[in-house]
Image (cartoon, rainbow, N blue to C red; front, side, top):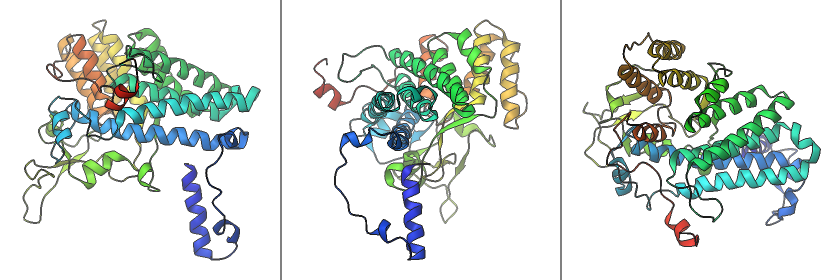
Amino acid sequence: MHLTRIQSALALMCILSLAGCGDFLDVTNPGPVEDDALDRPEAMPALVHGMSSDLSYALSRMSYITALAAGEQSSSGSYLWTKAVAGGVMDIDEAPDVWGAMQRARWVAESGLARMQAVLGSDFESSPLAARAYLHAAYSNRMLGESVCQAVFDGGPPGDPKQHFERAESHFTSALAIAQSAGDAQAVSAALAGRASVRASLARWDEAVADAEKVPIGFSYDAIFSLNSGRENNYFVSETYNRLEATEYGTEWAEVFGDPRVRWDTLYDAGGSVRKGQDGQTPVFQQRKYATFADDIPLAKGTEMLLIRAEAVLRDDDVPGAVEFINQERAFYGLGDASASTPAEGWALLQRERGAVLWIEGRRLWDLRRWHAEGLNDFLEGRDDCIPPSREEQAANPNF
């Protein structure tokens, strides 16, 4: 639970009772809190909540932008930048500052970990909070590795984005060790699932499978959102549910009906005609995966682990083995068996299944990017495939 949820609940209780809360309601704002006030064990929960908030804030923006870039959604909106991104041009200077938000999430988690180690001392290695902090740092780095064109760390020189995967793997490994020591089963699975995904991205498939097979099929680890404030809202909902800036119309998913993994619906006006988006022209097939500002975005799922195992054996041309893992995943969602006989059919099936399982979770662009590099998918041909460093980063960083 975010700290602000607790505060809001307390305030509401006070307002409703109108008694016994004088000290809470009469508190005086002391002004800015000194940095060293965080150097206390009792401040660590708030520090980790802040990491979680920054990760969620960045992910909801990154997932929306990359959904357009990866063809998970098309533009039906009034923003020029969304039309550009949906058309394959990653010119997002007018977009929400997704580069800065992702870098903030990484930096806050990693610098917070250093503070926690200093404050907690020997208790750090068995602290569930430390395991969670490592997970936030790891998933923030994975998010960057899957979306940016260049890795840039704290004003340093630009480098290969796979550096983020290597950094994420290290953080996941630390999270796993601490979670096992603390007996935190959820954090253990979150660390294994995250590490499996980055090891797959680093083409270390045997290690990826070794992690993936330990994660329960029903497991899910989410980025958390709430109704408390605009900053805690799921931004994806703002643009695709409250406003009609994006649509499934014109995407491959517009031909997918009744799939619980890809939930969308056609909107109609009072006269029975299909509603148009903010541009007044494009029909709206509205995503229904995220319908409220408090809907969470998955960071890791057990069903993805089955698809990692499927891709690993498919890379050895074991089509029946890949189909078996895929059908285990489909059965979990109540879907019938799929089939494939040749490697080409197997790859087409795998790519479609990963697209459905991870639909609008901010993961598709990286999948398309790595498959395009191997000649396995041509969607990104002639299109931008990553988020460039922001104009602010380039202006402030002397290495550009």
